[in-house]
Image 1: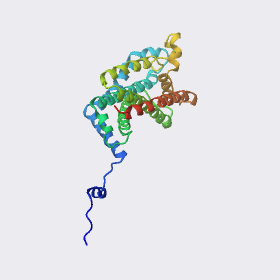
Image 2 (image 1 turned 135 degrees about the vertical axis):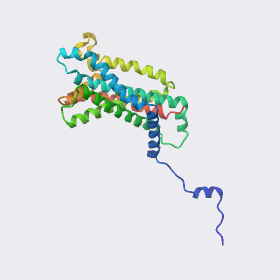
Image 3 (image 1 turned 90 degrees about the vertical axis):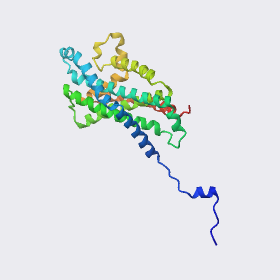
Image 4 (image 1 turned 120 degrees about the horizontal axis):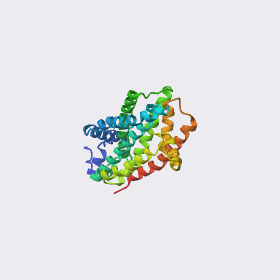
Length: 269
């Protein structure tokens, strides 16, 4: 006796279904973003940006700081690295805004893709850009005389801390980009606070170089505390008292930015 024929629903139920893992989806989307950055010259820009910062900040002030007994190459490189990480932040914001503008983010929401895959893929691609920029910045710093003198542990801590700051800032900027469908206006809006916090910090000049009335802000704002910690890591080694304040700022920003970016990424347009 022949086997009974299967109904169409039963037939499709018995067919094997191919399910792509969230990791494979993340890898594909991350590779897409990195390939786009490479073909559009963004990785070249990531290499040249720290060169512009190094030359633009070091050359005008090195002789002035030399009269004050400051090795300006050691002094200025942490803020050069932090400013480089800030430009990675703006790159992530523009990418998220472009995907929202073109409807790519909305399209991904209609597909069987892990809910956090698009966000994490953009952040991972931004981390690749950050590593590229950090490597270039350290090479340029070595040329002007910057060096690590506290051993490999502090060197790794310097790099890890810089990448952590860049990643946290990129997460927050990604959230803004997901909400703002205008890459150009978003880039302009982020440039102003980047310049204010960078210039009004102890990254370029000591606290004594600022007027008395603005020193409390300059001394206690996050970029200054990040620069203090990284400067000590590159020098004699950071102490817990200095590192603790920078970590508090970093954790506070992560607590603020991560939920915001997740909400902005997964919300339905």
